[in-house]
Each structure stands twice: as C-alpha cells, then as structure tokens.
Length: 494
View 1: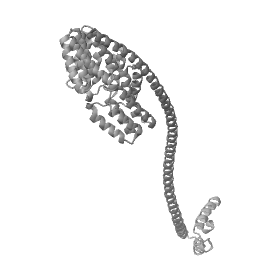
View 2: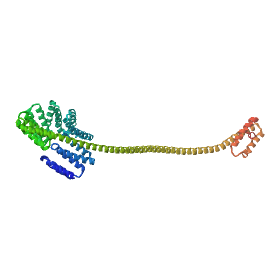
View 3: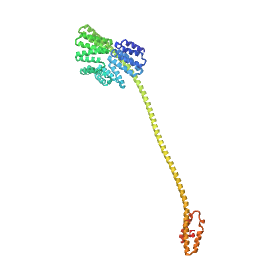
C-alpha cells in the first residue's frame, strides 16, 4: 500500500487538467483496492491514460502491474500490462522489445479467440514500420484489416490510415493517398486527428501546399481536443516546416515554438530535437545568432538523446533480463502444471479404464443373467412338459390297465359261454345220433348215448369251461386217429 501511495502522489503531480478527473478517480480506486487482480487492472488502466502524454508514467505503472500479476499468477493481467509496456518501448524507439512483448500478447489473445488481436496486429505494424521493415508492416496491416470485428468497424478508418502510413514511409505516394483518403471516408473514425496529420504530410510531400495546410489546421484542432500531445507536437512542427518552405518565416517560428513547448513539457525528445532544427533553419534567414543557439540546443539534445538512448538500452536490457527470468519461471511452472495435467490424465485414464472394465463386467454379468434366466425358463418349460407327459403316461397306463382288466373280465365271461355253446352243440349232435339210431332200431346204442348224456360229465371236469373245449378238441383228434364214427360220443371225447 505504501508503494501505491507513492505512485499516487507522483502521478497526481504530472496529470494534465483534461485527464485530472479520470486519473483522480482511478488513483482513488487504486489506493482503496485490496485485491491484487483489481490493483493490476487499475494499474493497466492508468498506464493507458499516459500513452500520448507521458511514456515514463506508462512504464512505471505497467511495470508495477506486471510485477503484481506475475506474483499472484494473474495471467490475463500480466498480458495486459505487457501490452502497455510494448506501447512504451515503441514510443521510446526500442522496437525489438516492443515486438517481443506484442508477440507474447498476440499468442495469448489468439488462444482466447479475443477480437483484440486486431489491436495487437496494429501495434506490430507500427513497430515494424518504424524500424523500416515495411514488408512485415504490410503483412500485419492486412491482418489488422481482416480481423477487425463488425462491432469495432469504427476503427477500420484508423487501420487504413496506418496502412497508408507504411506506403508513405516507402515513398509510394499513390498507395498512401488511396488508403489515407479512404480512411477519412468512414463516418465514425478513431484517431481522426492523426489521420488528418498524415494526409497533410502526404500532400506536403506531393507539393500540394494549400491542401496540406488545410489538413494540418484540422488535425491541430482535433488533436488539441483529444489531448494527443505527441501527435499535436508533430503537427505544429510539420506546419512550421511547411511555412518555412513557402517562405513564411514568422509563421514557421511561431509553430516551431508551439511544438517545442509541448515537446519539452511532455519530454518528447524526438519532437524536441525536430523543433530545435526547425527553429534553427527558420532563424538562419532572419537571426543567425538565434539560429546558432537553436542549432547548439539541437546538438545538445541529440547528445542527450544519445545518452538517454544508452540509458534506455540499459533499461531495456534489465527489463529483458527480468522478462527472461519471468519466462523461465513461467516455463518451470508450466512444466509443473504439465506434469500435474499428465498425472491427472493418467489417473483419469485409469479411472475411465476401471469404469470401462466395470461396465464390461456388468454387461457380461447381465448377459450371463439373461442366459441363466433363459435357461431357467427353458428348464421350467421342459419340466412342465415332462410333468404333463408323465401325467399323460400315468393316465395312459391307467387306461391301459383298465383296458386289460376289462379285456380279462370279458375273456373270463366269454369262455364259459363258449363252453356252454359248444356243449349244447355236442348235446344236439348226440340227440341227432340218438334219433338216427332209433330209426335204425339200434336200441343198445340209443341207451349208450342216453347214458352218456345222463352221466353228468361236468362233475368230473375242471372248474374252467375251457377244459371241456380242450377235451373236445383232443377227442376229435383221437377220433381222427382211431377212425371213430361217432365223434360226439363220450368215449370219443374222453
């Protein structure tokens, strides 16, 4: 909290009147913030407030935010602060460091499918353009125009102007004019003051003085309203240079001093030196002493800028070293996280395999249960059929036994009847023989036959009537052997 109060006191002293209300609010929130993530976001927000007015403030605020974000592992806040630091390094001319940071930021936002990638492309465009790599600048310009989402259509004019600025640096004035003019045709344009300034520089280079002056005047008015002091200082200097070319020395000196005043107050070293050189060139025609004085200031400024460049290089070296350490730490953390993820994946795989085995065993068990149930049903069905068959067999046996019993009874009844019938027939035959003997007058034979009939042969026979039948059949057989004529006589039967 003590460090935050120091930052608050420091930047209250350097905020300009136009920014006072917003920066006051942000610093007030920062002094009360307790959560680290909230502090990081507020520091990133504050650093953006000084992009065009105080680069050193951007560096201090964004560095502090980056330090806190890395300490608490707040990746999104870290990326946001790196984006602001990339803007700082671009402003001070360390394009390599700016590109390095922007590529890290770009990789993160790409992985998140965040539409802010179009803004990162534009940052890479500026860095490559200002270090003279126009091929890469045009490549990222194409990506910027391609990836601007529909809801951010108002920035398309700025994107076209940035592409035009690349062609301007390449001295391809026709292409520069096409894109810079196209940029002004959008109804809602972000950064219109800078676009007008670039159009003025283009027409100045094309020797269209009146058109250039018109664009410069519009640019100055808008840039002053927008409080874009870096571009405003550049607009005053460009206007002064154009007045010097047309021989209007007083106006050239006037605009040169306005640009110098802003550049000195805001510590824009590059614009300060450009103002000294403009004033030196303008005073050379009317006041050589003043010209020499401004020329000396330009030389001193260049020396100072050289020393500042050395300091910036040292600062950049330290920053890159810290960044490298941070990246190594992040790499180690990523390795640990990767191992954790790998272990979790292995455990998850084992768990999934275990679940698969359980499911498979359960399915096999269910299949076995189904088969057992099916077999049980089949066995029960077979048992039912067997019981039914057994019942049918028992019933058949009973019926068969009853049939045999009935047949036996019928047979036992039939045999005596047959015997009676046969005996009756034999008696009838013997009576016929007796009648025949009577006709012949053979009384003895008649008496013998009568005696046979009266002898009651049944008393000496076995109880079953069938024995008489057997005896009759036996007698007939003997009669056939001995030639008995009276086959029905008792002696032949006996």
